[in-house]
Length: 192
Image (cartoon, rainbow, N blue to C red; front, side, top):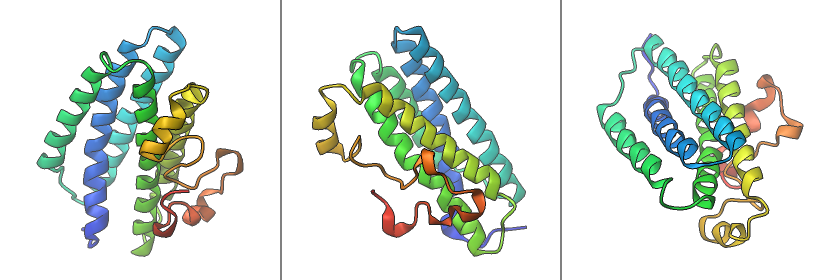
């Protein structure tokens, strides 16, 4: 079956390639930290990103959505640059920007779910929900590591993410079930 939904097709292609960039970034991030617990947690997040890439590819294959050579190249380069930069920009910034990135990534999966639902497809709801929630867990982890850092208020003002705001409206302590998760990441509540 072919998808007739250009936004969904593009979002699938972007998500697939962006997961590679994230995984590359976390390889560098994990290698750059000294604390063994941080290293272990970041390595697990890298594994999660590779798993998400695999899951997205399975969905793409089901609908004959081709991999974008442009996105693959672009996100490969971005991931490698971020990975290398983790060794020179200090401890705080990799954690901050990883959290900010994950905050936006949460909605990719909930928007995919909404797009699929808009064309009557619900079979991917559970996996897309799970991937979105996993990205939220990543966001929370990174924020937790830096929440007491004196640089956070400055970065929060500059980049609009931190203790006072997220790029999604998900509260892990009050999660909606899959069937009611349509309230997440609506276009009108992009930054809460």
